[in-house]
Image 1 (tube, chains in turn cyan, yellow):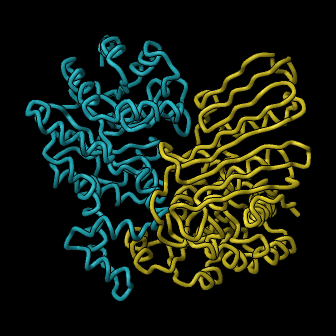
Image 2 (cartoon, rainbow over the protein chains, first blue to last red; image 1 turned 45 degrees about the vertical axis):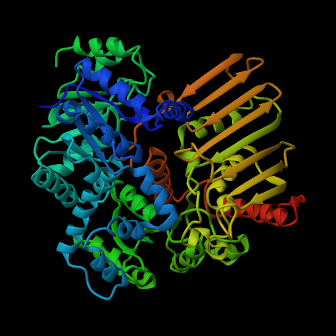
Image 3 (spheres, each protein chain N blue to C red; image 1 turned 180 degrees about the vertical axis):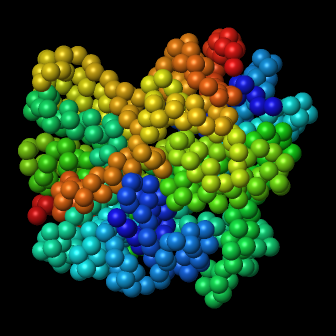
Length: 290
Length: 341
């Protein structure tokens, strides 16, 4: 069962889609893990028992804290987002895509094979490539096992890259691995919902859980709000709505009134940086039937 | 239309994905020196031809356009191969380690009247596009001075690979990332008359991690740019420009545009005007890594289809490169002013 309200994670890691300076300030505020834990515990008391979590290095510290409390470890639903893409973009600038793959796999028994492939001295078999991708997924998820993983989302940068390349098989490979190995729900984050649904039609993935931005001003909604709404109306999916306030541009009441007029909204991600507005926000969301 | 990509790093993958999603355009082939990468692609996409030899690909694939996303020192040689065969090309920025490297390329591109684009994508970010409209409207009156920064928290130890080798990359943060801002300033304010520059390396051995430039534009505007890829607390590449003018001030960054006007002019009222990203956003056909990349790539494809050149073409990149060359020369002489030819 999916949580209706999820605590967002961006404010804990310095991400702000309206203003990068605000993002950095909030990151300072949450520099101490205890402060984040305070917000999590507060939300937990308010019966908000789900949380988005990227695989940022700070999130690894957070995961350790959560494991210290049996109640949180067992009952706080973690919706993991893999990988923390900004880290890899920087690493790609620093050492190139191939070295990222190699370094990520260096702790596995697969590393010798990778070295041989990279020297080009032997051909790579299809099954090797697929094995390698699953190992890269494992590398990202490893610090977060033993938590109550409700779903594992593929980051929009990778989902959308697969969409651009029309590589439906990669999405299927990801979904099957997450389902089989972690016994949890595979899911996708995307900035291109209509295209994702079209591509998933070519796969065995049915009624997917998808996270996407949606708000009444159409901010970060592609290719247009109209096309997005049409897709929601016509597709089989469960939508986890993010950027519902258009990064703070909209007031909660008008934002949620619009959001809950849409079909197939299963959950909402809420970015909370203080307790002040939390109770009000939760009750506003709960006032809508969905 | 059919296109190919040379160089399968992160930018190659990005442009391939975006352009492959543009109507009537298909990724037909790609070239890279890593057989491992090529095999990996072929394993999932059997209909895409892969080549270790890019010249062979250009000869046999009957391409309408090529995307070049190799390390910088290979840009001009790769573009040359395309130009020789009359194939329009998109080149990631910067153009080359030095401006003179590109002289022969420019000549052949002009002779063949080829459509080209070099990836100065910041012009396609909503806030910077809006700022251009405001500046061009003349609402600010005479421009007096500006200050600008471009920072990212990327490098805090010695970097590996071609990006940190002077000969292969041409330089450090100035040529690789700050050229985005140099391009914006040039787009906003026109030709640069002279520059003074100071650079500093701290983490890198061969290339600069910090660069500070003072500009004098031909229209009399003066101002400075500070740049670094080693500034903490900048998760993403962030640009800020503050422009002071007779009739007001303009503040623009990736997140907003703020305009202050002493007096109403050109259809704008006096006082403060603010535009946030949600005010300016329009959806794109596909968003991979940011809508500005999609707008940029679509502009290139449209230019090929309509035969109309784009603002960020090879000539523009050459002009940016000359400013960078002048800056490095100034830095070698402890900030002495250097004229931009």
